[in-house]
Image 1 (tube, rainbow, N blue to C red):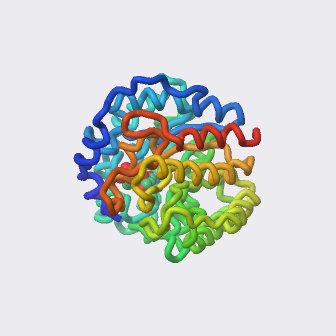
Image 2: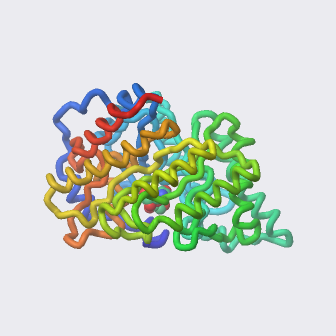
Image 3: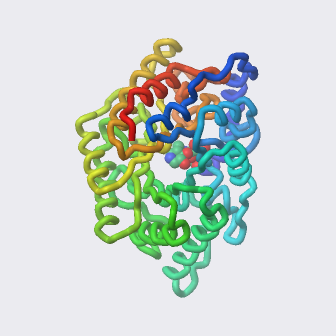
Length: 381
Ligand code: 9MR
């Protein structure tokens, strides 16, 4: 996995240039939209969008045709990076909302809902460095608590009811051990205490919002320890009366869990259903929060690659949508050129990946049709 600095400084110029060769779409966008199809079943469909540094894969918002796709297909948006501590808070005293607000304004203009990602990405790699060098003083637990509470109150307070669902904590379960991750904050506060604190604070600040724990345990082989760790976390939270409403299942399908791709299709459906039964049995809803398909190990041929990806997506979505508790489906980007997977774990043949519903020329792909078909087949909720 690349580090934070590399992630921020990568321009991905080569890939992006190759992907962006044809700017004009030329054909009408498909109807009914994914948003309409979802809504007919009591679902909500949307996507991540990034207002990152111009010219990088994190700057999808700068592409007017991409914005057209979002406005047409989505009922809900989520900031890809703009609400993360390392983007929002360059230092302890600064909150820089400029990028996040561009997305909020766009969503408001188009009557779209917004999900909030994420109040505490509790992973040492994804905090700004000042979190480690900060002077926690004579009462470090109190100072760590103050930082977390102030952060949550500031952001939730700024956006109020405009954000109706929050990834309160993201990825705090270590997939290797199933235990909780330790950060500069939790070493003072406690690894579980920081999670509870974040949810209690979020509930007080956003009494009407859905509060979500979000993570990347998935249905592929090798995810068992991660799944068990997430179940333990959720069970503990429920037992302690922590206010949590839903589990965010990121749904980066087709990858392994060791931060690499271990094979396209190693899905363990029976095991995954047991996991989903446990989660929904706790009274939690399910958010498909970051859906994409990783084609790292598929053959290069586009037609067969797209078909295999569409088939896997359909199988996955049919399973997930068979649970009436699944109400939100968000793609982690709608267009291949802007997918985070272009910058991580390159294919052996070096060609661009095709993880999202639209190709680099703003054209819908079989993956989009698979999502549409899954919505049409889904039971109403
Ligand atoms: O797509 C995001 C990418 O642009 C960022 O560089 C990266 C680090 O902030 O985060 C990516 O999004 C992640 C999300 O926030 C949490 N789940 C995993 C996603 C893919 O890495």
